[in-house]
Length: 81
Image (cartoon, rainbow, N blue to C red; front, side):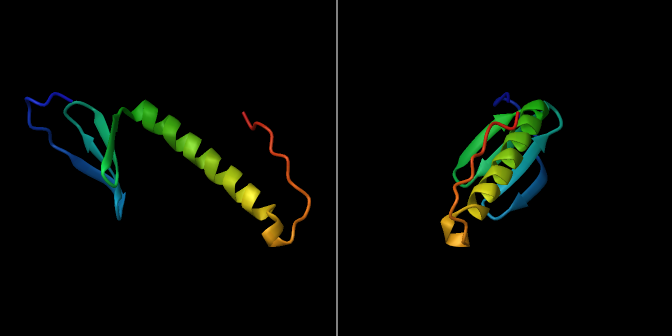
């Protein structure tokens, strides 16, 4: 983003300390996570979304297979992609 120009930021989504804003003038997306900000474009946002969804599924699989849930056999998770 060019810091010499005032950007019009449009909030796309948000919940608590996590939000996504978009500047229609330059096409930049900002992902805010607490005190951290990631500036990116829509293609990278789509990739990040896919990676996070994949991690969410894998985490759920691992938690469902955990001994605390009555499962004593360790689940082997290979690469999905």
